[in-house]
Amino acid sequence: QVQLVESGGGLVQAGGSLRLSCSASGRTFSAYVMGWFRQAPGKEREFVATISRNGDTTAYDDSVKGRFTISRDNAKNTVYLQLNSLKPEDTAVYYCAARTVPSSRYNYWGQGTQVTVSS
Image (tube, rainbow, N blue to C red; front, side):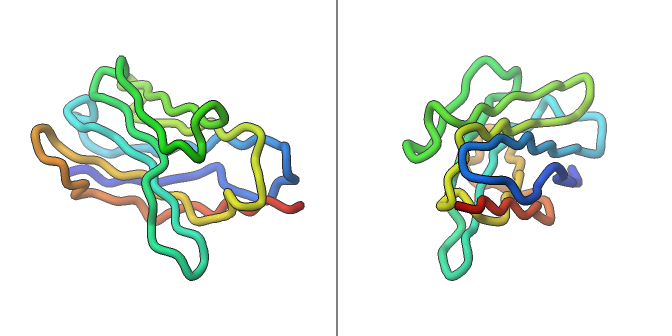
């Protein structure tokens, strides 16, 4: 099992940047595909980005492509999400999640960190 703790959220003006971090417990962090999701008020949780176990493959939702960057440091058991050119519609609680291969289901979730973008 893995426990996930997000940090780095906050209030930022439109056009600004934030870097979210997600620290994982356990010694098998590199065994997990990691993902970031977000949930805005009154909306369903949605996919943001994912990164492969060794970090060589990433994928993004079209709404954040070119603005957000996912990365990981397996030595530090941490996955990051760099958020640039933020827009008010990026306001949401951001969650990191982990899944094992070959499952497509994310089994482990953090508690979330709030990102608020003011116009």
